[in-house]
Length: 273
Image (cartoon, rainbow, N blue to C red):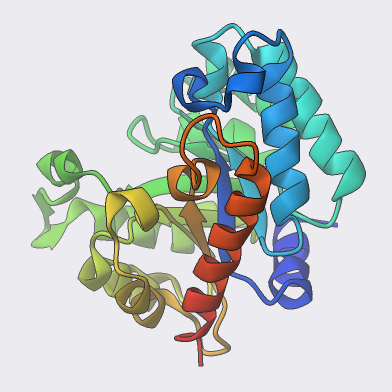
């Protein structure tokens, strides 16, 4: 099953556009995991179990693991998700961008080592830096387009032939890079007008949408701007708001994460029609 097929099935099966981000911050983990050598694994798998029927995808952010030397735990988390919830797409949030030979190794890291269904990449170095990911014809390649951070405007709004650069990226991906039909774009919830512009350019292509929850993106505006004709088309990510829904040290962190995930999914669904 390809990434897009799996994502479409998850949208339907869980009636959800919610992507649950896995960003384990050791300083914010419950106390029982602080001194556990496998604490990150234990925390993240508990979150996965608590939210798997509410999510359309899981998105571990590799930096949170690599900074702690916890890539081995990330491998185990990815394997756990794929073994227990093989129908939920696994997105490795790596934002890689490098020359072709190096990109081949990053693609192997994402798809072989971690078994990801999709990976986020940076398009700044152009087509030959993205091609190694596209060679994996069944895997998703999610390209940065209009990011949720304020500084994204420094480059993404530069005019090229009278149009902002992010729109050129959207058109390039939709018209040239998406030969396998497995591409998606990252567009932030913090910019709903630009989200609507990208949707108009790329048609039904999926969008990974960070920026709700802790970053303050408006759910109603996001859904109305980015949904497709059938009310899907998005993976709306929430990480910190779900992971840390209870004060640090709370024993009910998984139950609190589930409640927040359900509230978020239902808030999204309220505006999908």
